Image (cartoon, rainbow, N blue to C red; front, top):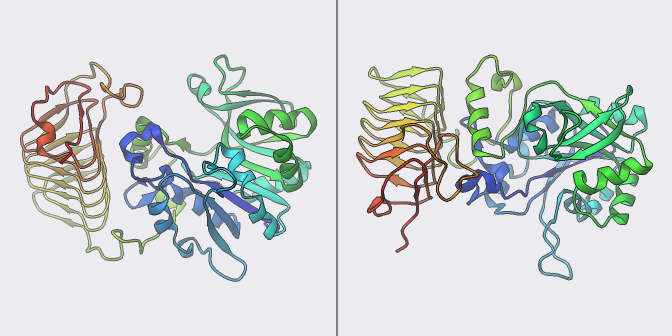
Length: 421
């Protein structure tokens, strides 16, 4: 992998993750207990022997920067190894933020030049998968391609979310559709590209567009060889609340293909609030834990079924957590009941409260396109009062307190806002 530099796109706002992305970049959202979403791509790059990585950040990058630190967790330190945070380069205009995936790479080509790169690997920081990029780079070089795209089959009903390719018998792309209404194929881009450096530099100079899928790929097909590299393992775009919850549940399913133990995903264990300062997991005699991932520092006295608990979560006696994702240092008090809940860090569920009740009758009243499948989403440091009963598709803003729940007519799809003051 000499002469190869990776650009990892990690500046996404993650608007479809709603309140989970309000305070952090999407790749920094916790996943699978003790990990963050970006850990999967960083681990892949490390195992692929990519030694130079530029992290392209933009939206609320602080927690992401703190997590990556100097890259030691992924063996990215040393004389010939480096991981660098690359924020937008403000130029003549004060609003020179990244305007798309291609524009993000365009603004940072000088980073690749510094290392005499012959090919660029462009990666996304918001996907869950296990992949060695080295064979893809070898395939790219063997074909003499200008651009190679990692691709996999997706369900036909999901094709409108992806860039799609029609191939010839040699896996050369002969037609490209970007998020079409009427798909000709279900072979979809994974957002992983290997690009010849000289081609990329020329293409970015000539193109007025800002996106790989909409601009660079269609333009490349007119004059150069573009190939698909086929992948058949587990891969998930966790950019929506439903997809995020489902992939976390896949961690608990032995037949899903998402195998954290086998993949041996790396994370920054020394980051504040993670493993370094935590006591071991404690489970009392009154607890019932089945098919769950429960992290260090948790204390379980109640019931935890088919759920993922990040470090420091406490479930008190008589409480029940089912089919849920509960993040760091949250408290589920006595006799509280949680069903299909995603809760951000340091949330508190008061004694006897109940979340996730009833049938799915309507989507969330404020974000119907984000929350419609029956989940309940609770923002960071929110406090749900004792004995409150909330129906499905309810969304609770970060830092919402007891007064936020006053004079609310609770129904399916309720929106509970933080009260200022």
